[in-house]
Length: 122
Figure (cartoon, rainbow, N blue to C red):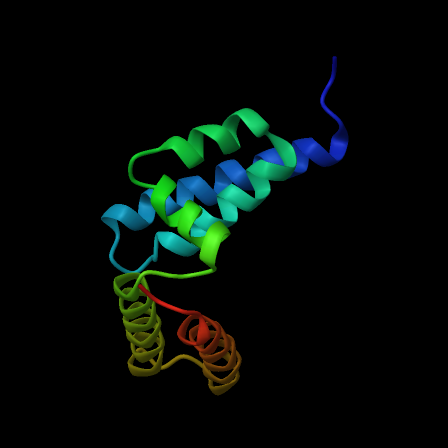
């Protein structure tokens, strides 16, 4: 039985998201938790087996379960994500990025930070 076209897209997005999360484990400028949550969302739509694996994973599973059950984000994940976003924007500023790039990225990053900071923590 061939995969449905929509499911294939979700599966690809799930794999890309978990790859970015894995990179975020070793690269401090890339937060892990948001990409794990994205991977779980995409996997639930495109690959039930991969979604089950993610939920049972010893490192990724607790964050996914906490998000699904209570819509909470760990305080350490919030602090790390917001810190890295500020650092990234600061680097762009000091490296002389164009004003429009700073403005657009600043608005986007502030929106993401606002969303993160308004979610409950544990």
